[in-house]
Length: 273
Image (cartoon, rainbow, N blue to C red; front, top):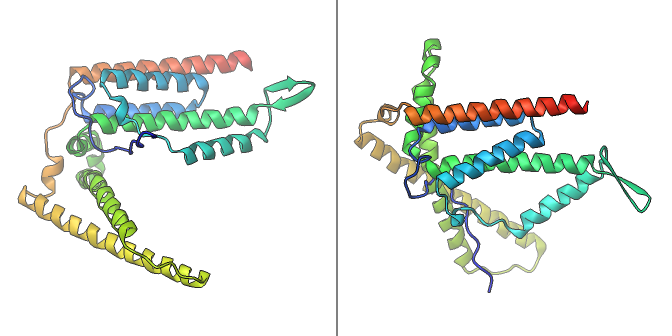
């Protein structure tokens, strides 16, 4: 009997207390942004390895259990394999000679590099989700966006909107899962003609969308009442939020990693050109 597949768990912090959990939410956002910019300008194997090392070390320090990592479905592996085979037809340098036949590995290596970039970025986002309380994000965004207030930009409104979106996302996922499970349990008659099956599918889709909209409006109404009872939306971003000594150390480490990775990648490029 195969083991049950582990679902995707995001926007819900993993229980526990570690140095990563205690970091300011703004520090984590800055770190993700800095590493993302690094991979944008230097998407080579050396920066990817540096960022992957940061992800692994951070996961160990945060004591992220193995069960928090979702299972990868088989169909996703098939899509990745199909993409790799398709990219391999692009050929290009370097070349590999097998039995007198020359194969270009450039397209395949580029595909693998892009896939690795996507994986490490997903890992960074997952770590922030697993170690950060959603309630800490809005005050951190409000603090980071304080210089933008000089330009009369609604930073607090942006922070509140982001906080509400992050709070509503897990709830809506649960509601949609319940709706989908209820739809599967409902008895259905299988039409004989293809046209009737299409009509049945369209009707079920309309019913499911209507139910999803109704559930979303009900959740929004409940959240609005809860926010009003707690003093209004302004209280979401008004919570005191500022970095501490450990946050400056973490930002210094990220700066060193970005600088070292960029220097090694640039030196490698100049040496091979």
